[in-house]
Image (tube, rainbow, N blue to C red; front, side, top):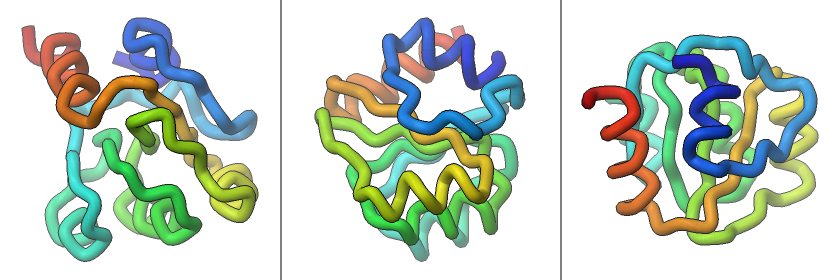
Length: 111
């Protein structure tokens, strides 16, 4: 599934304009610890988190992730959006909880 398809099916609001929305999503990693994501996330996955600071973009770029989903109606910091635009990392926003977003994504990718 492509990032843009995922965003549409989960009713996510894409918060960046220069991210690669045609990229394949191979899976998902859910964590709020940057070190955990750096150690365990796999290339092509989307990352679900509550974090909104610029370091999430650095980690997503380092791991070559397909995108970042921020849950619970949280909004990224302005610097985070600027960094995401520069790196081409899509940031998507969910009004749902992390649990609900992860469950919905699981159903889309695995069922």
